[in-house]
Length: 308
Image (cartoon, rainbow, N blue to C red; front, side):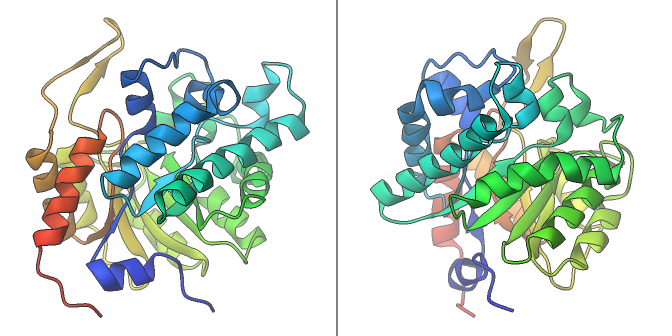
């Protein structure tokens, strides 16, 4: 089987840098993301804003940027009156925008970002996994999204913030449907394991059996939980990935972020801890910024590494 697109970067640098939070930076720049579509609304309404944030992450050192399609789906766009074909076109377009950012920058890879079923519902269930669908039904939901994303030829498809073993199983089924494409899957977690309750080791073991899944990991998770969870697994083939939150916590009652974020060098220290615990793919999730990624880029450049 052909070499996965991330391995040359691991061989060259010791680890792969993904981007920081797309939506966070869009909001910092004045975008209104209050719609149920979140950043996916801007695919049609302000595509240049998306490209500019992608470029900010590439300039900060990202090897891979994630498309603005996390919240995009036929179900979500149907609420705006879009047909299935129109919804699929928006997903393809999101990947094309990321491709355009890479073209302007001159280097980089694109991951087609797809969120869990719960993200599309926009009811918080992405952090519980309490869905009315089984794994086969979840696979049926995700399959058209993957097909639409692949029309723009991303380097890989990234499923993010998956909360449960059922959705992991769905992703495994979908990946098997597209053996010509590369996939990775990242899960939301708490101190016990996945948000739905299963051990992190179970999903890693399941994804090890799918040849075109190249990485598994954790995202949208409190920084202090990342390294202990990584140490519960020792995959034989998969790369481990992490994209922690900034350390701030969303207060749903006051609708405000609270707590002190890890910024700059502190965020780079978190990255080092994740690397020491086995991660070879590192990025940032909610509330992380390009300047945090820059600090990780500097740490990577200073870290001794012997090319494989």
